[in-house]
Amino acid sequence: MSTRILVIDDEPEIQRFIRISLNAEGFDYAGAGNAADGLNAIETFQPALVILDLGLPDQDGYTLLKKLRMFSNLPVLVLTARDEEDEMIKLLEAGANDYLSKPFSIRALMVRIKVLLRDFSTLQPAAVGRQYRFQDLCIDTQSHQVLLHDQPVALSKKEFKLLALLAQQPGHLVTQKTLLIEIWGKTHAEDTHYLRNFVSHLRKKLNDNADNPQYIRTEPGIGYRFLLPPE
Image (cartoon, rainbow, N blue to C red; front, side, top):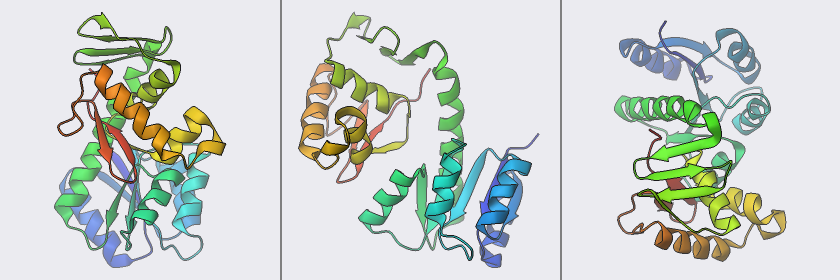
């Protein structure tokens, strides 16, 4: 069975453009022109990935995304006409996995789709046994142990939680605010200096170079991304 992709967008030309492109790549396409039909299609079509436009006629894309995240962790690629940093942060915090600014090329669209599908599929089996393996790095979330080149790495509780939060979503950008709330609580949601210091200490313990990272890449002003897929 072909991989199913749902496109929620009210512009017929965009739908047509994406449908032709998806079919040419061997994907199974379904389209919805508004939020209500999109939610129904998620239940009936059961897609592997959702492409979501923010400007829907019956409901904005942010609201739909938040509703979706209440019952599903499907990868979502958002289409937006705006590319400001604040807008991107808002999207990621609402639950988007990636975004693409309009106008976009078919090559950029397909690359993002394939990367999201790849990362999502590799993430699932990695959670089995709560142990994550990435080349020379092993993270065991049950025993709270980290091994690098088969040698234990001494991490504080917060350092371990930070590493685990990133490693559980390989390839995906995790926002500063998400990490701060998860590790320090809502009262520290804006204390980005905490995060910078912890990431710096964590990199030193993992022998990771910020300028040429192997494990953790900084997305300036937005968040961090764990680079390696699980084995």
